[in-house]
Image 1 (tube, rainbow over the protein chains, first blue to last red):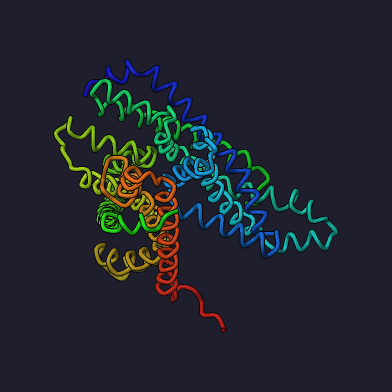
Image 2 (cartoon, rainbow over the protein chains, first blue to last red):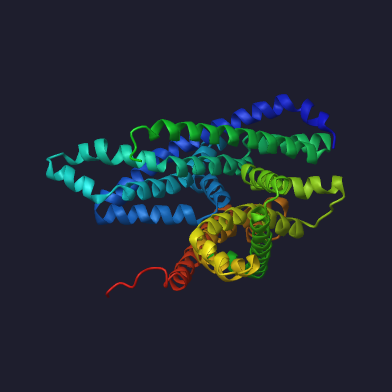
Length: 218
Length: 222
């Protein structure tokens, strides 16, 4: 073990960690949009949209992320459209995460007692305001722990983005390993960075949970 | 899309599929055994041991599988651990999944009602007896859904082994793609194949789950 290898490479690793965080956050946000849309389609979009939503979830949860990433990278190229690596990376992470987030949201919405929306309908709430005032606030609270879990999974999955050539933590530590001939130190360094980011994420999750818990029934 | 190329490469693809299944099953078996051992050791009242296991689990769960694989495969030789790609891949899958299985088993143990264990203690059962006859049966049933789930996740994780040149299905597909310039066909076939595989596993898993947990759900008038 030569820890100084990590110290020398610290600047590169920090930059790469920034890239990892950037790709992950972009993937999470894209996934949120997709997840919300798919969840809506499955719950109140009529039989055809619900079918399409179920198909989407089944496909993107059933195919390994590495295959999805390469698929996106090559699919459009088949039609002569050149996909930039960054778009393929963020798109791949977002599409896959969207499927998981849709299921988390759907589970959370189903966990809100049906009586509540019936009561709201009886009181004359419109459908939109039932969603906005009754279902969504509660569903969000329920879905925070599984969402944080999904975000840490996505952060780790972002290491696969290295195969399309994005200079994130894994890619950069590969380069460091091959230029210094010290793979042990290089990958341990990358692992430490991932661990640190994940611990921060878990901390943020705890904070969000406590914030949202105010007003929850005990 | 050209099916004939897939047909021409059928032997190597089949051998790749065999390696995928091998890595998956042996890796999962190692993970299950080690994970179970960790969950049992965590129940011993030894604070330092529990911290060590906790740290192990957090490190494994907090770092990407790919990075762990690289550490094992290309970092291993520097500490005298020289492994072939497939061995490293299987070992990597085992280590990676052991942390997740340990957590699943731990959750399962906490699903056993405390009253049952107290009752067993009060009628004079030994702690080994309690573990074998009371905790384990309840806990295994309670953890079955998450075990099936983890097995599915693990089956998809085997693709990552192609990056360290384990000759599994993805690796063979990529070799085919490189030799015949059919990247799209290869990846498309991979996607469809895994989709069907995962759907099939989860269907079977649901069946088994329903069978095994049948006694827990009250019988419904049908």
